[in-house]
Every structure is written in C-alpha cells, then in structure tokens.
Length: 498
Image 1 (cartoon, rainbow, N blue to C red):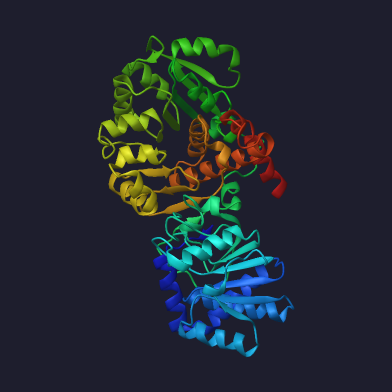
Image 2 (tube, one colour):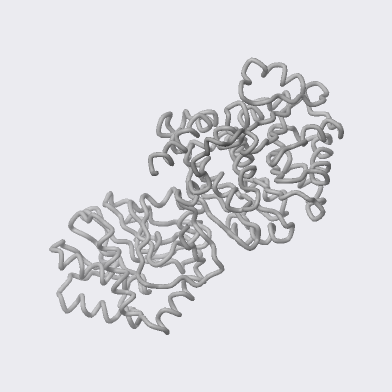
C-alpha cells in the first residue's frame, strides 16, 4: 500500500522534514527535477507559475529543461515569491531563461507543452481573475499538459473543482492526496505518477490499495482442500421488479469467481423457479413471497443463514416493510460478516441505523453517495466536500466498516482507511453494485478478520473487472454483466504476476 496524506498532513510532513534534516530549497530542487524527469516534453515549453512554492518547483523544472536543450519560457503571475522560490527564480534569470507576465499572454497555442505550476495541493475554493483565465488558456492550448503536484484548481482533499486544469500527466510530489483520486479527479487527470523527494509521511495512516495488496489475499489453492475450506456465502434479495439484481450478484458467478466455495442464492420462490435453468454452481434457496416480493419469515431466514460465513442482503429486495423486518432480524441474529446493500441500506436508513450497536455480526455497509446521505443525514454537497472525514465519523459512531462508492472507493472503520482507485466510467449503470456485493461476500468469507482490507480488495477487484469490460465493450455499451464476466481475467492477471 502507498501512503495517502490529507493536505494538512502533507503540509505538516513537509514542515517536519524542513525543520529536521532537509532545507526547503533542496526539497524544491528535488521536486522540480522529479517533475522534469517524469514527463516527455514537447518543445517549446511554457512553465506557468503562480506565487507559491508550486511556482518554485516550476522554476527548477525550467532550469532542467534548459539544461536538456529544450526551449522554454516562464510565464509569471507577478513578481511575488516565497523565499525558496525567489532563489530558484534568480537562478533562472541568471541563465537568461525568458520570462513574461501573464498579462502579456493571450494564447498558449504556440507551445508544445505546458507545465502547470499555478496552485499546489493547498488550494481550496475557486480560481478567480487572472488565475482562472490562465487555467482556461491551458485547457484551450492543445498542448501536452503536465501539472506539478496536483492540477491547479483541484481540491487536494476532496477532488472537487469549479474550474481546474486538465492534465495529460500529473506529477504528485512526496505523497498522494485524496484529491488525486476522488470525485472529479478522474475527469481532470490523465496519467499520474508520484515522485519521492525524501519527505517521510506524517499522518493518521490512510492508504492507497495496490494490486500486490489484493493478490496476497489469494495464495495458490492447495490440492488438499475442498469447497468448505473457502466458505459458504448467502446472497439474499430480489423481487419481481428487480429480479436482475440478485441474479447479477450470484448467477454471473460473482461469488464463486471471487473465491467462495459455495454460493447460496436466496430469492423469492417465483424468481427461483424462473432461474432454475440458469443456475449451475449456486444453490437455490427459495424464500417466502407475496406476488414476487420477499415475505419475511423468521424460520426461513434462520435456515438460510445456517452454516454461512458471510451474507449479503438487499440487492433488489424492494423498499418494503418486509425488507425492514429482514434487516432487523439479520442485525439481531446474523453472525460472521453481514453486508447490507441497496434496499438493505434504505431499510437501515429508515430505522435510523437502529440495531447496529447490538449486532453480533461484522457489518459492512456499501452505499453510494445518495444512500450515504440517507444513512448519515448529511447533504450530498457536504459528502462531496468532506467524503473521508464523514465516512470515518459514521463508521466510528456505528462500529461498522463503510464502503463508500464513487470514482474512487473509500473503505473505513473509522480508524483504518483505505482508498481504491480502480474502475471505469462504463460502470455507471444499473447492477454494478450488485456484482460488487457478490465479490465482497466471497472475499469477506475467506478473510473475516480483516473487514476493511477485505472490503477494499473486493472494490479493487470489481473495479479492475470493470476496466477490462470497458476495454472490450466500450464505456457506453458495457453492462454490469460484462463486469462480472471479466472477473476471471482479474485473477488471471494475478497468475501472470507470479
């Protein structure tokens, strides 16, 4: 896993490094060198500099470009510098690197590359005045755009922006921040790399999940093993109106394709009868119903839960009183891992999260932002602007593992927080969360003692499968079923790495 620091933590880490062992001037030199070496520059280059330390990184980058024989020009907001930045700007002028003021610039279309060094990760709010104009000129330039540290205008903590630079490459300096991944980041950042300049991270321990972290949870299976070793999971849900949800969770083999030994598919009886021809590996468990909708009976649910390691409930169940009864029962009686998704979350929100404090199960909730708004009582705007603190607060208060879906997924129990950055725009369609529930139940059954990492791994697997599906089908035409069908390829990639 890679370290992930909030903007405040990154600022603190930087200050500690400077006060302890590395002068700020040297850190700026390392940053500029890292930015220069990370990109494939197309001459001539415009280095667009603001007035903060981010501009200092740009001055060093300009020096490196000149030394490499790549024509460049510094475009300066005004003659206002930080102390370290002023030193490196002086070095640039001593080398006769051309400098122009922003006020003199009407277009950037004559440049092959643009280095965006206007704002750093400390930016918040909205770019205004000349800064907003330069951001627009960068985006209209048609040049190869490299953003230093983070795209100017993009919030480093939440990935939100009113107006921001669209980069071909973003070179993070030191450690990743959440804003490199959350919300709008994926639409503004092309490729991204992180360069180490010798700043030890000082923070509360947020992490970014990597492929190696996921695959270590799936060692080669032993010959001397059987299906029971890998756990039985129950996938409970479905209704006449939303019959596809439970089928995507199980019939697409999302459970078994992700490591479960046995999948118990629990759905209203009439749905089970229709699905019999399609069910091969999963075990069908008919539930009582009324006109195709789930009817809660305690004895039936008790039997459905018998012998399982993990249960996922809510996919397509319908937002009904019977669903609410089922959630109350599951919170009281389920053991092992209990995953609540979709209508299970809606029912829990209607109960004002009552019952979470007393449950014996390890509970994992999987809301998208709208569902999290209903669960937490927070507005969508507040969630978008403070996704990690609000997720951590909720998880800590209710003693659950929260998997907050989005362009990047946040998984937290309030103490441990992991982000995953895999996924594709084509996954923004009905059923993607149902596939995730099947994957999550399987991974949680195999690794019940590490719910945060298991949930993050499931999100990573689901996201990587979505990427593969989009490569095959395109972002418009792919479906959740395509994501489920791509799951074997994710684990095949694991085999190729070994």
